[in-house]
Image (cartoon, rainbow, N blue to C red; front, side, top):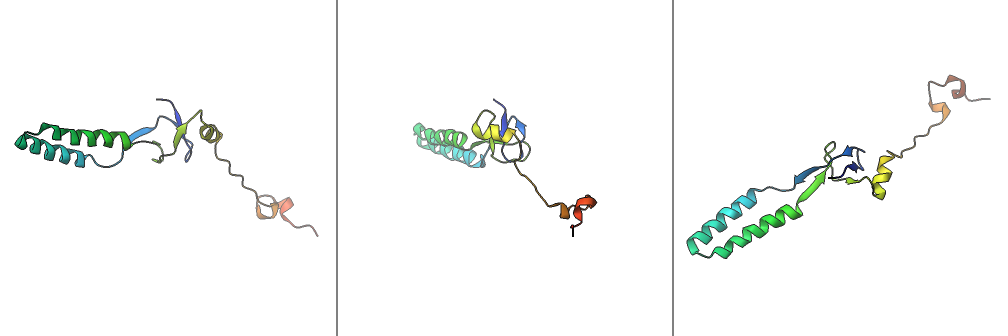
Length: 110
C-alpha cells in the first residue's frame, strides 16, 4: 500500500484499515441461516449470509489515520495530498503594539 498523508494532522504513512460496524450481526446471520438450511434442507439459503458478509467487508472497509483516527487519508501524489505535504497554511498576523516583547515598536509615536 502506498504512503498516504492525512489532511487533518498532516501525518505521512500507512493508513490503518478498520471495519466500520460490528461483525456480531454477521455471526448471528450465519448461525440463523445455517440452522434454517440444515433443518429445511434448503442449502441455497447459505448464499444470504455469504452475500451479506461480502457486502459488509466491501462497503464498510475504511482507511483511517493512525495518529488522529479520521478518514482524511489521501494519496501523496494527488492534488489534496501535495497541498497537505506543504503543511498547514495558516498565517497569523498581529500588530507590533500587541507584542509585549518588542518594546521599541510597541510604543505609539506622538
